[in-house]
Structures are given as structure tokens and as C-alpha cells.
Length: 498
Image 1 (tube, helix red, strand yellow):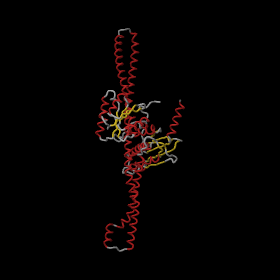
Image 2: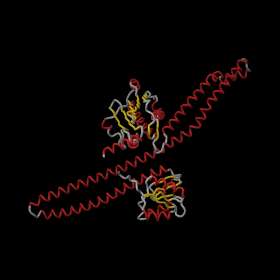
Image 3: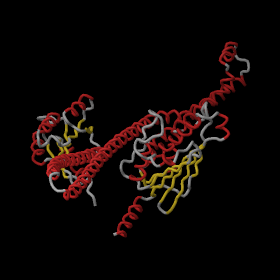
Image 4: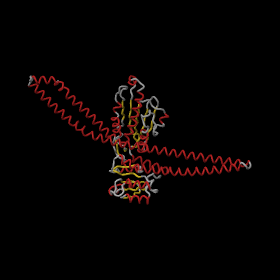
């Protein structure tokens, strides 16, 4: 089995707080790392030079020399200058972060420490360092090979000058040597192409990591906003019933006054006519009913936002796929509604009642549904711009969502849109990172690439695109219902192939 870039790595934790040291030591040790600790900057410098760790987690605020000075001294040392340093700090000022990066740090995590965040950043920078070291080694080897080739070329030219003076029979031998040299040049070119490919893959990995961090932060922000709005909305909706009851009571009392005192004082009569009392009595309850409908609508939207941005962490949990799809549609409802240039987009849901919960990361799958459905709406709106309202109305646009239990451990989700469709050539490239058919500034070309990564690599499923120009596009997703059953099936197939 291949060793991951961060396995068997040595990490030095520098923190004057013994509690922080204990928590990080236990967590990183359990994650497969070899961990060293230091409680002062002076101790960290000695241990770093002695053991040469693969990465250093460095606290900023410490007695003696602080984290900034410790980092400066590490980067000044010949043995320790290449070791990546990640600051651990409660400082959130921009100038403190800029200072850390200017001293040579590669990243920072804020306190209080989140173990999963630390693990993700440690793995990412260990992977980057291993790839960088590998590229440096390959570069040194290539430079040496170039020197060797140049030396061989010089020797060959000297031999050629001498061979010209010899008999014609040696020409065949020279030709063979030339052929061998051309093959070596081709091998060198192939090596250089492989190096460029590795650099491109590294850039893609970095871009995916940045996008993943952005989506995680956005999900946390949406969940927080939904939580803050939920309490006052619940208060308003809960009290609307009481307000309606109180209003009905007041109107009953007012009706009794009008029955028993049909001829009120002139001042009361004139005031009632001025404020249009009869209209208020008729419209007030309708207004309260409308307010209740609006409040319920707001609560539904908040619930959809909280469900869509759910944060389960890295562990998979049983999730209802239908609720995830419905929450995504609720968020996109404004884009599906009737607009001035086109009728509303009809959504047809054909849910399999036998499809219950599946083991997955619900928040990440919701992101997949959002990317596919948003692209479908974009395609429909693009095709609508070239048609009249009447043409669209005669053949209305639709999005059909079908779910089905394919077999004992496979759930199938198909999302079809009646947009313009795409060619077979573009279908083959649609999941490539940064590839997009949208105009500049309209799309990054990374949404479907991340969706493919979430479905295939994270959940062990499959994601396919099938489209015919002029007839719409269909995305087919297949997911394992139980991750444990999938792992058992994969293990069984591996044993059977041995």
C-alpha cells in the first residue's frame, strides 16, 4: 500500500500552554504523526536543529522569545530554513498575519484550536512540501543529466572530427551513436513534460483546496445568519396568533358597542368615517393572515438555509437526500419564478419512496445539487434569451429530478433540464478543473470539478453527463447507500483479484 505524503512525518509543537500541547499531541499522534513538543522558543530552536521535523506548529505569544522571533531565527538557520511553519495565534489583526507571512510562515490557525482544521492544514502543507522536495530533487537530477549530456556531446564532436579522418567503414558506427543520442534527447523531453504535468497537478490541488476552504467558510456564515434570524422570526410568528385572537376580541366588543349604541356621539361618527373604520374591520384580519403566511415563508427559507449549509464534519451520517434536494430548490426558488422575459421554470420531482437515508456528507452533497441545478437554470436562461415569451410558453422549460434505489446498496439521482444541451466533445471535458462554456466573468469552471471530486472520491460514487444539442442535458449521480457495505465490497474484490 502506498504511503500518503503526510504519513510517518515528524511535527514539532511549540506552545507554552500545557493543555494545548496535550490536546494537539494526542490528536496528531492518533492521526499517525510522530510528534515532538517544546514550551519555549529557545527549546524549539534546539529541538528543530537536532531532530529536523517536517513541520512546526508555532505559538505566537510565549515567554522569552515570542513566536515571531522564533520563526525569524528558524528561517535564518541553514538546517531549519526550509521547514514549513504554521502559526497558532489568537491575534486576528491583519498586520499580525502579514508580519507572520513576511517572516516565512506558510499558514496560520486561530485559537481556540479546531483539531480538524489543524489536521487539514498540516496535511496540505506536508503534501506541498513533499511535492516541492520531489520537484527539487528531479530538477537537480535533470541539471546533472544536462551537464552529462553536454559533456557527452562535446566528446562526441571530438570523436566525429577524428572519425572523419578514418576509413568510411566507421560511418555506420557513428550513425548508430547518433541514433542513440536522439533517443536520449526524446527521453529528456518526456521527463520535462512529466515535470510540467506534475506542476500543473500541484496548481490544481492548491486551487481545489482554496475553493474548499471558501465553501466551508460560506457554509458556516449562512448557518450562523439563519440561526440568528430564526429566533426573532419564531417570536413574530408565534405572537401573530395571539395578535389575531386579540384583534377578533376587540372587533367583537366594537360590534357589540355598535349594536347597543347605534347612534354614537357625532365626534365618534366623524372619526370612524375619517379612518374608514368599516374598511379597517374588514381588512385587518386579512392583513394578519397575510403576515402569518409571510412569516411561515421566512421560516421555511431559514430552515432550508440551515439544512443546506449543515456542517457534519468529516464523518458521514445518515441523511435524507430528498430533504437536501428540497432545501436546494427552496434557495433557488427566486431563479425558478416567473420573470419578465420568460415564464417560470417548472420543477418535476419524481422521488422514490423506498429511498430512505443514505450515509454521506449532506452539506457537500447539497453543494453538488446546487452546482448542477444552478448550471441547469443558467442554460435555460441562456436559451430563453434567444426566444420570445410566446415561443417559450408554447414549449415551457422544465427541470426533472428523479431518484431511485438501483440495487441493494446504490441510490440513483438524475437531474434533467430542457436547456439547449451541449456537444459530445464538451461533455468529455465538463468535469475538468477550470473548464467552462460560460463567458468570461460568468463562471470559474470549478463547480462541476468539485462536484465530481465530492461524488467519486469522497463518497465512492459516480457522476456522468449525457446531453444532445437542442434536447437538454442530464446529470446522473450514483451513490452507495451504506459506506460500510461499499468498503466491504471493495475489500472483497481486492482479495479475489490476488
